Amino acid sequence: MGEFSKEEATILSRYFTNTDKNVFGLINLPQVVAGCLFSRYSRSKKSARKILLEDFIQDPNMQFEQIVGAQKEGAQSQFIATKRAEEFYERVLVGFGDDSVAELGGAHVALEQISILATKFIQDSRIGASPLEKSTRYVYFDEKVDGKYKYYRGEELISSPAGEEYLKICDKLFDAYCDLQPKVIAYLQKKYSKEENVSERAYTSTIRAKTCDLLRGLLPASTLTNMGVYANGRAFEYLLTKMYASNLPEINSLASQAQSELSIIIPSFVKRANDKYGISMQEYMKDCRQKTSSLAKEKFLPQAQKDAQEVQLVDYDKDAEQKIISAILFECGMDYEEAIKKASQMQGGERKQLLDAYVGGRLNRRHKPGRAFEHPYYTFAFCANFGQYRDLHRHRMLTQARQLLSCDFGYDVPAEIIAAGLDAEFKSALEDAKSAYEKINRQTNPFLAQYAVPMAYKLKWHMRMNLREAFHFIELRSTPQGHEDYRRVTIKMLKEIEKVHPSLANYIKFANTKDVELERLEAEKNIDKKLERLNAEKKQ
Image 1: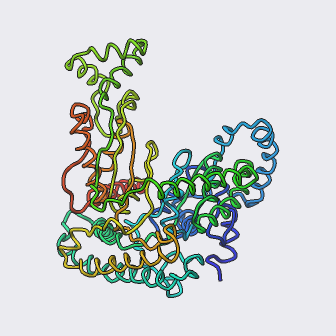
Image 2: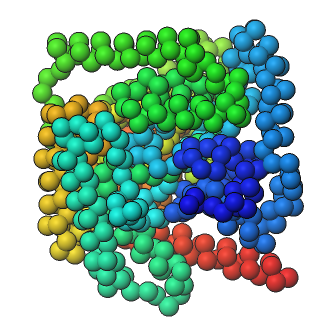
Image 3: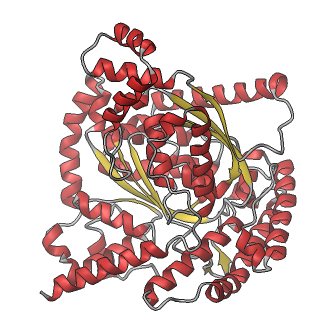
C-alpha cells in the first residue's frame, strides 16, 4: 500500500507532479507556500508531500484553502497552461536562441532518499539555484525501513566485488550512531541540566541538536536524505547536463528523473539538457575531466601531505586597501586611472577616514559595506572534516573546489565524545570505515568508494572569496548557534585576514569568537518567545 490513501493522493495531485515517486515537482502553489514547505522540509523526517498534507492542508490554523484556492480541477489546468506557453517559449528560446528567457521561469523540485554525496554534487551548481537539504542537526538518522538502515544501495556498489564489504561497514557505522545516541544524551543531560528559565521544548531541542552534532561524524556519505531545489530554467538545464555527465550512476539516474518531472513544469527550459546539444556538452565535460585527471596523475601529482593545516591563507591581494580606496573614489566620480594614482598617494590617516565613512556605523551583520570591498580577494585552503565542508559549502558568491572524499587525511573526534568516555566505540567504527574504504577503492573506483566515507574524515578543498563576501561568510558562520566545528574554521579564517590586513579585518566587527557549549540554546529561547507572541496574538 502506498504512503497515501486514494482520497489523500487525489488532494495531493493538485500540488505535485506525482504522488508515488521519490522525485517530483511542485505545482499550483504560490511561491511563499512552496518556500515555507521546503523550509519545514529541511527539519523534518516527513516527506514533502506528507508535510503539505498534514501540516498545511489539514491544519485549520494554516487557512490553506484561503491562501491557495480550491483548485478543484487539479493538476490538469497547470498542464494545459504549460502546453500553451510551450509554443511561445519555443519561438523565443529556440528560434532566437535567447537563453536568458529561461532565467525568468523557475520550478521547485524535491529529491527524496538520495545520498548525502549526491546532494553535494547538486549544490555545486550554486548560481541560479537555491537548494535546501535536510539537516543532520535537527533530525536523528536512526530509522530503518524493512529492517534496513537508510543508505544508498545502488547496484553498481551492491553487485561489485566490494558489495558485501560496503554493506557491512555502512551497517556498522549506523549501529555505532544508534548505540551512542542514548549514551550521548545521558551525558549531555548530566552535564547541562535544565535551567528554570528554559522551557522543556527548548531544552529537549537543544540537547537533540547537540547530540546530532556530536554523532554526525559517524554518518557515511551514503546516508539517505531529502532535499528541495528551487532554480530558474537556465540553472536547471546546466545542472541536469552536469548530472548526466557525472561518474556516479546515482546522479545520472537522478538527472533523468528530475528532467522527467521538470518537463511537466518548464519543458522548454530543460529540453536541451539531454538532446543532441546536451549530449555533446556531456561528452565534452567527461572528456576534459578524464584527460586532465590522467595527465595530472601521470606527470604532475606528488604524494599528498597527510598533515595539512585545517585552515591556511594561501593567496591574497597585498594591495587590498589601495584597491578598495580606488574603487571608492571611482564610485564618487573620479576617473579610474586617476583614482588608482590618488589611492597610492594617500596617507594612512586619510585612507582610514575614507574607509570609516564608506563602511559606516554597522549595527549588525546584515549591514554590509559597499561593492568596493569586492575588489581584494583571499584564497583559503582547508583540510577539515566532511561535516565542516558540508556546512560551509552552501555559500554561493565564491569560488570553491574539493577533492574526492577519502580516508587519507585522518578524522576528528569531538572533544565531548572523548570527555564522555565514548571515544573507543567512535574510533573503532571510523577505523573500520578506513579499511573498508581502501578495499572498496581497490575493487571499484575512487568515485564509488566515497559512499563509504564517514563525515568525521577530513578532505581538502579551497575557497576564493572577495572581502565583502568574507564579511558575510565569517560573521554568519561564527554565530553562537553554529556547529562548533565550522565556527572554529571560520574564526581561523578571520585570524588569517587579521595577520595580513589588520586594518580591514577591524571592520568585520560582528564575528563571534567566544566559546559556546550548548550552541542552540539561545536560539531555542528566542523561538519560545516567538511562539508566546504568536499564541498571544491568536487569543486577541
